[in-house]
Length: 329
Ligand SMILES: Nc1ncnc2c1ncn2[C@@H]1O[C@H](COP(=O)(O)OP(=O)(O)OP(=O)(O)O)[C@@H](O)[C@H]1O
Image 1: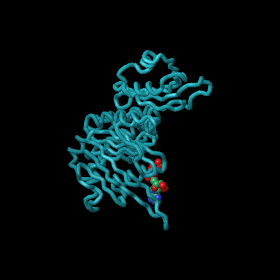
Image 2: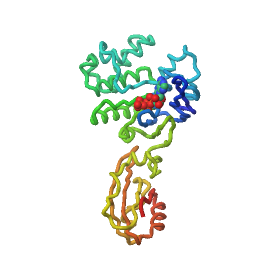
Image 3: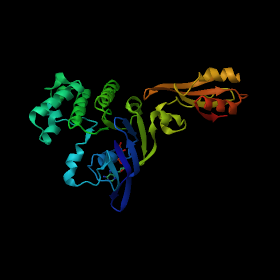
Image 4: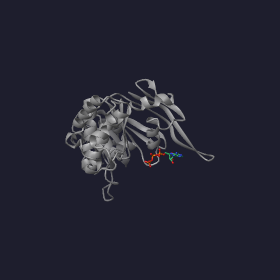
């Protein structure tokens, strides 16, 4: 388990202070995939540097399985770094080394015996599906294959945490899916904790169990995907299940509602229950249905006529597990 407690990082620029991380706290359980999403300048790179111990935080702590990493001596730093495997946006491979030699590199650094290294590299080549490319050089591999090598190299020292910094930002959509599928398979097989730092909501949708929204150095929303989408007016809910544009102009007077619910929460068909119970015509203006963290979610924008008993409808929807937001009346 990785625990980040009240992490602050303040840079000095002349007599000016830049607060890059402003009290970030976060806990990710073993075997979970957690996404940290934020726009440019939110503090993602600073967080990565603090987590990989390349940069010392101004205050706060990072601990792995209860052991505080932020206070350790420079001597212990090398050993501690091995517990966090790093996957970069561009795989950052050595061009003069083959796939197998790139994967072996972190093991060579710590003087692992040759037999042991060979066995570990073979195992990792299998896991990332590159056994046939063991002797290929990076220039002979596709971007997705290079990223697979990067993932295998990050796993070589059996880290507790796999820290992926924008792992798919340089890849096309199909290759992005392949790499995210691989990261999930690696988690399933090795039960490693995964942190994915990204600016792409699609990555969170496809790979993460839970998510934090980082903004101006602070985590402003966080939780398991099912929890964050339950907050219908939250930014993550709107970004994970986006509805197209605003409601069209030419709709009759009445109410515009947004509804958000999961297959588990909505115990009876939502739209037909409104028509049946309240005798109202429901006009669906927009909708989005997604699988998030293994559960199906629907986000709908609907129109109801002026004479609809809106308070009774809201109470009913709440009772059957649907989050409601009245957008216009
Ligand atoms: N070495 C530094 N000295 C001064 N300010 C810095 C330094 N590094 C980062 N910052 C500032 O800290 C804030 C967060 O930057 P950071 O690079 O962590 O954001 P980011 O989310 O990674 O952005 P991007 O996605 O564009 O890389 C920004 O205001 C940035 O200007």
